[in-house]
Length: 193
Ligand SMILES: [Ca+2]
Ligand SMILES: [Ca+2]
Image (cartoon, rainbow, N blue to C red):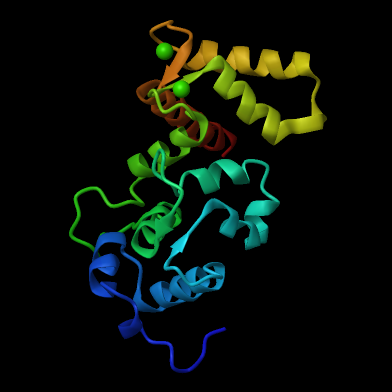
């Protein structure tokens, strides 16, 4: 990998993608090499099964959901710009916004939360149902807990987050419950000092 001839100039629309996602040229080049490595048949697009070569996803209990997030509903292929747009969610949030002109870059905390929300909301109806929450918990906790424990963890999570009592977690409820966790965490540290 990383032949000396590889250059940012070989990537179509590189400047636009960098501007949009905030990735540096070096980063983008590395992602392009990764993409080409996965694109075994060199069609310029990846299918879900191409992601199987990424070991960190294969080992991840919700790896199939993360792979699913690369694809728009009903789409079986993702091209390089879309691939990079999804990966931009994982870029650390800028503390001083020197790069990019976008109001709401992909790595903003709201977009990150939306991405996480989407991993739960598999039917994309804008709400995490009890069944959807259970599926993720089951995948992540697996055999470490009994079915009964899973049910009670899900129950408690919904009770705490579900402000309008419709038995599901909307994006706003999701965001508020995570903000609470953050504040609690910060407060507990302050109390310890
Ligand atoms: Ca849903
Ligand atoms: Ca609700």
